[in-house]
Length: 204
Image 1 (cartoon, one colour):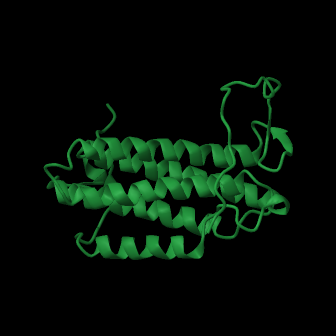
Image 2 (cartoon, rainbow, N blue to C red):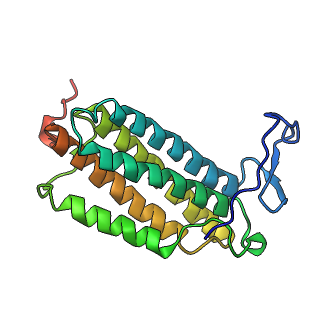
Image 3 (cartoon, rainbow, N blue to C red):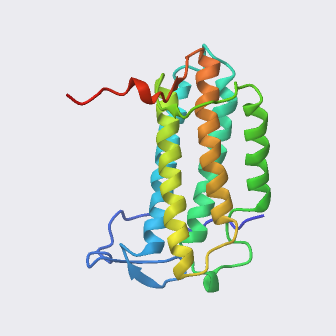
């Protein structure tokens, strides 16, 4: 069981970051463009896009009830991304025993979900072009932002120690967004557009 956050937000601005620095969870001051801030800031960006997908799906789930399970899954992912962000916002030496973080079972659950939904999908023989429907496109945006977060965490791990579950989780989550995008198109009955190099327009 994780500790509940002890947060009181009664002022939106504090002026403490006006010189380009911010505080980590343990109180350590760092530059706002540092590797750690870039990493968990991108996790925050990803979480916002996941919230957008949930809202888009909820506009269609009455006609496609199977999409409700994806909303439930993505809502859980949002909580896990907050847990990941909290861990990345804390130096290893400052982490507490019951501080929120990503667990091995979170990674295994993603793998199970990927395998289960992927069984419904036809095999791919080319890369998928994002689009076809709005939900598909938004999930591909989530995928690409997730991959950027993963790359930033790889860079951070070269500089500082980070929780060992971080990179496997983001790697698996990027895969999951890909499968969710395909599965959504499948549920909605939308055809996939595959990469076909021969259709690229020739330069005049």
